[in-house]
Amino acid sequence: MEKGSIKAGAQSSDFSTIAKVGDVSSNLTVPQIFRGILQSAPKEEITLTLPSAAHLVHQPQLTPVQGYVWRFSLRNDGQSVINLSTGDGGVTDGNMSIKCSPDAARFVIRYINVASGNESYILVRE
Image (spheres, rainbow, N blue to C red):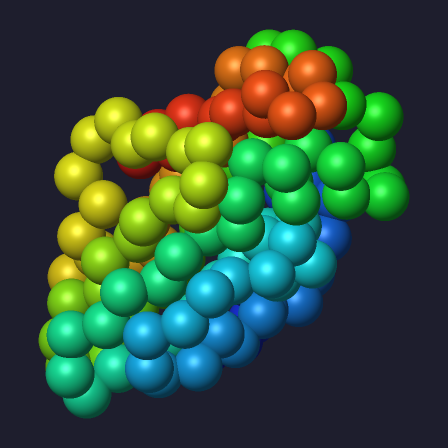
């Protein structure tokens, strides 16, 4: 399979294109996360930070529901490790370091609280 030729799964909403998220530490955006497949090729170790819980919960594509789950993948085509961290209101469960690999690491975002001012989510590595 050639790089960039990942195709959509039956239950995905936009897995047909890859969101290239850059090769330096940065904050990810809601549209990048909701593309489904993220790709980076860092030469040095970087950290990618997910949006805050408020931004994820109140994005315009969905009506927020407690317990809602969103899946995405992150492919590391670089020479060093990518670390994922959560924004305000987020917590992690599992190893958030992604080593260089032709295989993508898979993650789930589960909304824990969707009440305005109390938004929270958990990021789980599958």
